[in-house]
Amino acid sequence: MSATGAPIRVVVAKVGLDGHDRGAKVVARALRDAGMEVIYTGLHNSPEQVVATALAEDADAIGLSILSGAHMTLFPRVLRLLDEADARDIVVFGGGIIPEEDAAQLREAGVAAIFGPGATTQAIAEWVREHVASPDQGRATTV
Image (cartoon, rainbow, N blue to C red):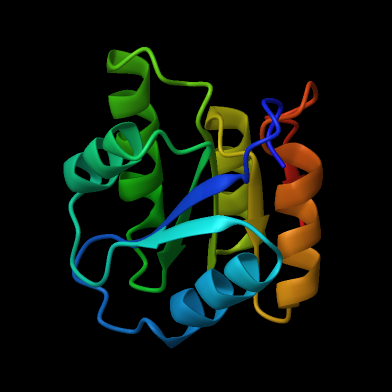
């Protein structure tokens, strides 16, 4: 539940040209099964589309799945767009094949958590439940 008592709303998105969405769909289903409202945007979204969807859906979080290697461009773009929309209360987390050095830089830039290969759907759902729409949201972690 969010701070308001409503279910946590999460936009799960694939950004850029990455065409592999099986993991994103598995995470979206796990979050839904954990009682969250999930808006899955499908493949080939721009950062602008993802942020527009999050704003229109009154999302509490954006979960980005990036396997294309463009994480150092796409995550920061989403964060900048949220800044421009004065919507940094929307927690950004993500996963994919992201080297630890890059994950550390992304966390410093404002990505709340990066889930690497092997992260369980249970761990992701628990992290979202504990960190999204709660007083300590935004605390950077790696799982």
